Length: 273
Image (cartoon, rainbow, N blue to C red):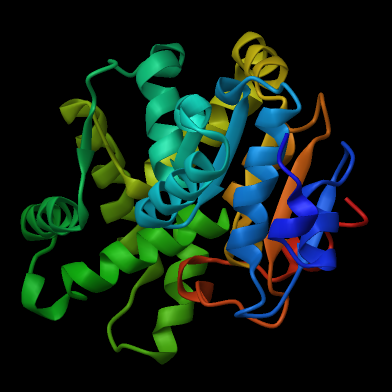
């Protein structure tokens, strides 16, 4: 068995080897948050937790790969079967398996940012009398994305832009958004925001799938928790509801994804939740 006290400082070791239950780890940049999370994974595997029943959520695929590589160096190839990746990639993986419950074909197409903007641009051209006097497709895409990530109406998101860009009509933006949703359904596709929205919806609406996934994931670990938005926080809360083994690691003085709905309240209110 690994002697984690020789690999980590006392505070890192305390977090990595803590008992089961909800864990909130707060630490500033450069203090070894990732190192602690890596060794937590290694500790759980050494304790006999099946790697495939551990979920590790990050904000970049690179971070997920780096953590697994580092955990593998500590305890070997056992960690290879861990569910690890970004919130978007994990939701996509689950929706490929169980998305038919929401009416999606397992082979649904994922629209990237360029695909999304082109589709919205085509809808604007076919729906607006004078597209030149309408907000640019990039702005409309941003408004639709804000609404999805913050779980607010498109009209509410569009109203914010009245002070930023002339010519924003919330009702017309909502009309474009409705047509965009319909067009995606016709194409059997989702954009990146849909992955989060539908991943959460599946947990909330499909009780049998939700119970099965809650039972399966014995431990849920989240890196950079301060950057989670409402969708992501609810997603992890639900998945961890049965076993209550959720480890949230972050820096409450740093929140860099407010532009996509990150809510610092998620990490501040974690203890009370």
